[in-house]
Image 1 (cartoon, rainbow, N blue to C red):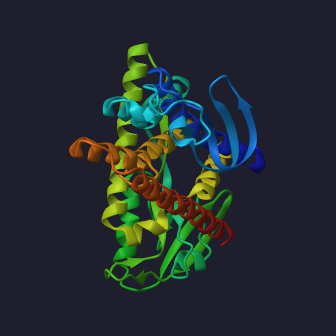
Image 2 (image 1 turned 180 degrees about the horizontal axis):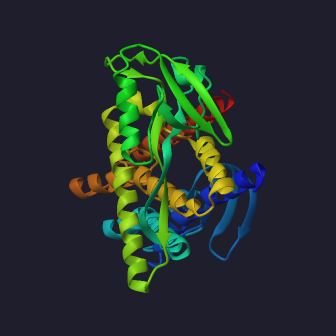
Image 3 (image 1 turned 30 degrees about the vertical axis):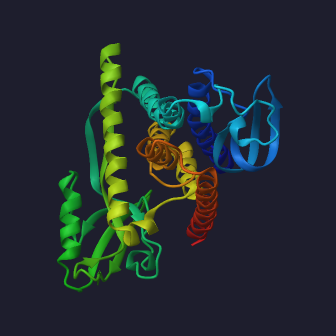
Length: 362
């Protein structure tokens, strides 16, 4: 698949995941009889719109999210403010269902994606290891001695200082320990790059924690072997196990980001980075797109449930305060907080786009 086609596929997947999230809000409102006057994918100027009987459906130019609009927030709406089917006039539980439905929709959709993946490619049946250790990623900052030496992602290290690494999961640990125990002396790596065999000398550098590193992420050089599913029960059970792994992975990643924000923030990918990763998958391993899309869908759910302004979690926090106070916060306070939150969210999105683009140009 050409690179441009891969990018289009990934942008389409991101748009689909955003649409699923907003569709969750929309259906939760409409099924409860709550008025909805806008359904938008994206922000900013309108690229396309359709005016339905009750709702305007729109595609907008800034693909950083979407929203479902209610006539409560529209000064031009002809619906009386006392209408019981306005969002603002519904009980807290009804509103909480609408607000949380986007997160629930993303989680359900992630599971369905994994069901599809397992149904197509089968269930894991073990790992088949190849000789050496895979260079999964090379750091691109100025302190990466691996990048300076010409080592590239997807290279395979088959030997260090003339000693073969063999073909097993333990080869990664052996290589890692050999680098860390080098004590600043030069090491010689034998690398397989597609059909080429390279000899690269490199001197590991000690980081702030005193451990010698070369600036790469290592992975076992193995291929997951899958077998066809036997029945529907195995299909849904295997997909549930994969879903549990994805949720656990995202929860752990979020915990690491919060616990060590300064170090982890530089590794976070924004919209451009996500599209680049997904486009590469679309070209090399299309079956992985299902799991990748499931991870992004769960990621959207986790991010949106955070108690931050302009996110679903922030609106749920307002509902919690309303329940504790017995009355909602004044509208001007809620609107001010949400507007500031939306401004910061859009600003962060644009910052991540610039950062990702800079990384791709290095």
